Amino acid sequence: MAAELVDDPRLAGLALKEAWRRVRRATRAPWLPLFSGAGPDRILAVPREFHHGDMATAETIYAGCFHLAGHRIEVTARSPFERLDAPLAWQVELYGFSWLRHLSETQDALSAENARALVLDFMNLPRRRRSPASEQPEVMARRIVSFLTHCPIIMAQGDDAFRGRFLDLLASEVRYLRRIAAEVSDGMPRLGVRIALAFSALCLPAHGHQIKLATQNLSSELDRQVHADGGHASRNPELIIEILAQLLPLRQLYAQRSQPVPRVLLAAIDRMLPALRFFRHAEGSFALFNGAGAGDRGLLLALLRFDETLGEPMSHMRQSGYQRLTQNGVVVIADAGTTPQGALSRDAHAGTLAFEFSSGQRRLVVNCGAPQKTEHSWRKLARTTAAHSTLTVADQSSSRFARSGLLDRFLGSPLVSGPSRVPVSREDDAAGQSLSMAHDGYRAAFGLVHERELFLSRDGRLLEGSDRLFKASRPARKRKGEAGEANLRFHLHPDVEADPAGTGIRLSCGNEVWWFFADSPLALEDSIFFADPRGAKRTKQIVVTFGEAQAEVHWRFERRL
Image 1: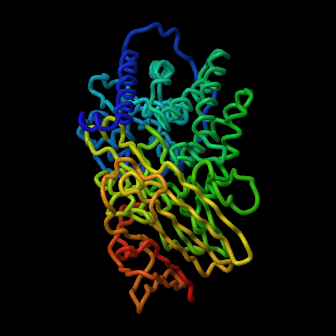
Image 2 (image 1 turned 180 degrees about the vertical axis):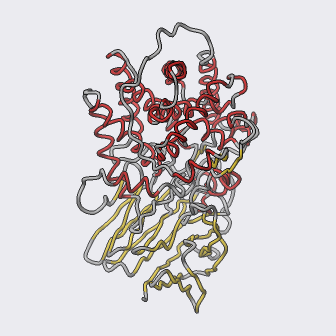
Image 3 (image 1 turned 90 degrees about the horizontal axis):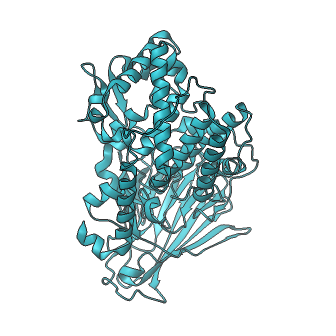
């Protein structure tokens, strides 16, 4: 790790910032004694839960089986909170308590007693015997929101002593988050903490200045992290869903407590709801860019009911770096943005100029997507350029990742470099829609720029494109080498049947038949699709190879049926 920090000053800066944050958080640890004052004696308001619960899952929890983050673990003999040998992703989900929604769904006395007993298990377990995951600020923030949201079922079977301990625990964790909020890692961890503190200020008895301060801090973070077009600063489309699922009940809480709803919160919601439709394919799935995976389609539909905007989705999200072409039921969504910076890139992918392509109720071309938490070993592969429907040079990614496993665990795998310029232009005329994009992600390594042009015909029966490599006008001072073979990849959705036929490839998708052609050698190879709710699935990809000294390749998808 030390060698890589020496070689990359930006990485060293990130590491030093994170180390300093951890030191400051440690000095404010929740178990350190400090004056706390009287705890709350009641909960004034209960937030709405947008995630649907499942009664069958509630039954498995009652039986001592916790299926979290894709891992199924039985804990009949002891408390689940003592399972320090469980996968970290499972522990994070367990200590976040979002699974309480399944118990709330049943609304019966048995589930209420189960919820109380499990929360009591957590409270009775000494901190030294808990997983370190339980003290992560983002996990504590989720736990606070879960406790507030599901307090009716938690407290239903509890006596006064239990309720007092439960409320004291809430107050203690809220005080801790207030002290360390500014030291939390940038991005969703910090925004999640600010959201949790706003929830607590509205749900627990609080002085007016506490509500005002929580509102100001949340507004500042929303202003910084939510772009004017509704995208998140990390460029992960799936975070729009996660954030809205918390902001909408927060908006309701302000009204319920007769507090003015913050202007910034209202504006963020109004911007993010149309962004949901931008990233949604016609059959309902979400586009797979920069950390987006299988997602929760039920939650997406629940959120879309709040979108009162009329007309077609936006054609572009310029600040977030995405473009959309739509004609006659055909949708093309493309990544046309630069690499997010610092901690905001911890889940970002090297997929610049990649696109997804769907027709009606079928997806044809996709990116591989983010693996589920059980498939952590695939995460690095899923973030590479080769896992996206775009061009790769010499099997290298257009963005550079930190190569140290220790550094990954410390910083969360940020990108350390990537495209810094992505010029975009588009036209809409009688023939159809066209899009031109370029990126300089291969300038440092090979002195090259990748340019991609897409055209979608007005009737939606033709998607054609060209990809070109040319020398950068200002090559990097220290190029790393000469470019090797360049390949175009078009990853196909698992539902697509692909068969080589003559000079092209026949693609059968439902009742539609498309053909793919290119003016360079092409082949059908194996691929993997990570974003299936049931786990990774085998699929195919079309690979087009640039010939020797070839600078440009033309290709097209053509619907014949």
